[in-house]
Image (cartoon, rainbow, N blue to C red; front, side, top):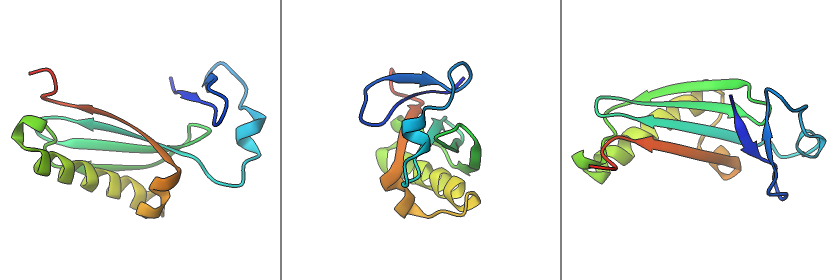
Length: 108
């Protein structure tokens, strides 16, 4: 289930149970959502559009922050770049992207 916020409204929507909001559908600027699953051995990224359609996936190395922030950040960027590339996009699209990250090692 994908849940998001409508731009400039603060209202939530769930793409599986609520019709696609017209205010988002009519925007001329694409809106993307990037999910990052940063584990101890690999990092996965998925990029979706505002409708929830999968645009790209990418993989990176370990993203456990206990291994060092530089290593984790590099792995996150590798995975994100892979998802963007698969979608035919580059890092310029990050200006229109909301990201959520789950990283290993945070509570340790």
